[in-house]
Every structure is written in C-alpha cells, then in structure tokens.
Image 1 (tube, helix red, strand yellow):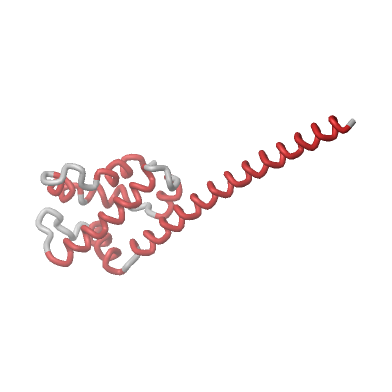
Image 2 (cartoon, one colour):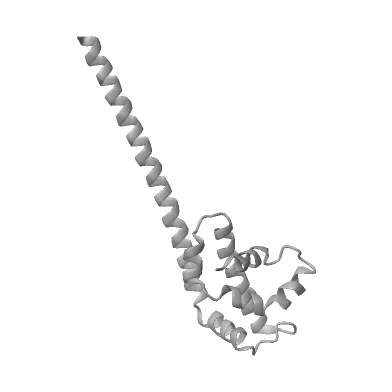
Length: 141
C-alpha cells in the first residue's frame, strides 16, 4: 500500500512541476510580448513628435524634394527613417505583430514610397540602408 501512495505522490509531484513549467513559460512569453509592445508604443510616441509629423506631412503632400534635401529637413528625414527601420527590425524578428505595426504606423508604405529616391541615394554608399523598412513596406496589406 505504501508503494502505491509513494507512486501517486511522485505522479502528483511530477504533474505539479509540469504545470509550473508551463505556467512559467507562458509568463515569460507574455513578458516578452509586453516588452516588445511597450517598445513599439515608445517608438510610436517618438514618431508622433512635431518635427516628424511635419516631415511626414511634407512627404505626404509632395512638398519635400528628397533628392536635394539639406539641413533640418534632412535631419528629420533621417530621424524618421531611423524610427521606421527600428519598427521594421522588431517586426522582422517577430518581436511585434505585423497587425500591431500596421495599426500604429499605417503610413509606412506611403512614406517609404515617396522617399525611395532618398533611400536609393543613401544605399549607394550603404547598401543595407533602410533595408528593413523597405521589406516591411512591401508586407503591408
């Protein structure tokens, strides 16, 4: 009889350990997803800064000649591209869901399309410039 009790006790202990491991794994996954989403929201907040909103508006309205851009406009455009590249990198690593990126950054395909001459110009000296952003823009529905 004691052998049966010991076997049942061992089985219950094994089940408890398995359940605890599954729970711990789900908590780790949830924490990773929350951290990635927090990063995405932080980038979105920076993306909404007045200078970047102005740059996106100029791009959208066709009032920014990206082939001869200089000064503060060039700095803002580079900053904008840096944000897009970071978002695209998070998406490419599957740290954030494409649906979340599309919801928070719906203008990425338009922006990338409009500034493509600038990206191509920069890629002459840096072949991987905006690589992730270009890939992400092509994945939009």
